[in-house]
Length: 333
Image (cartoon, rainbow, N blue to C red; front, side, top):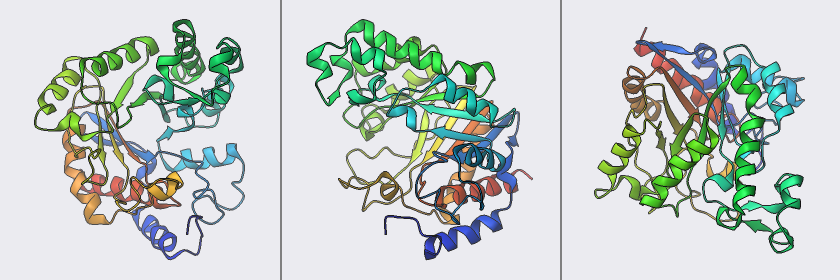
């Protein structure tokens, strides 16, 4: 079943567990001198917006859904900016539709991390400057872009997020490198270059386990800590060459990030499926509880900690976010 069904047994289980989790996730949870925000990596996934799954009856527009989501959680990740450049007017609407202390984490555009992007999704002004050879391609890579147009990509991305920055609602730009980016001087320089070009807070997530293998782990941690770059700790299926181990390291005293991708090993590297199927996994309470002391340990050393559930099939992510928040609150009651 690829489409969320409000009568799907899994959805029913998640709904029941979400009700038991209570509403503690609505506000940041204090841990020592810091605070922890729980949320999900989307509020618009088609499996999540099916009537009767997460949103109440009548919440059918983009505005109504964001307002409702922001009444349930204090942070959300924006995924759309990876595929298409953000729009300043859209960012202004996000500011208007969310409470004063709500925070958005924004995914970096594909071109910033070495991934290809669809030419058709680039802003018109940039497309028109590409030249006929590049403009006729379906996808282009960062290395294909003329230097001045790559500068324009970063500048436009930064300018579009200005409303969030001005309102104090930007958490960080999530820079997620593809699994073919291995530890190297070139990759480390790209991270520093991305931060400098964006001139915004970033958090880095790796997609290949070699960053933390026996040979590279110490150097990776030292690089992140020396440059005070927040590291995105992940929970994901293990056993693949690309699998990143669940390393928990505070590397920046201002921000730490945890992202939960689920443990759907069967679909993790399967081709031709919807992203929601890849991340279709409902954590059980024991699996969530294993992470609670790790989150607490980092939160004690960090001003702000974001715990984001990317298992956004249906109500799975929202349920797990509520449950995990409840577990942390109980630990620090």
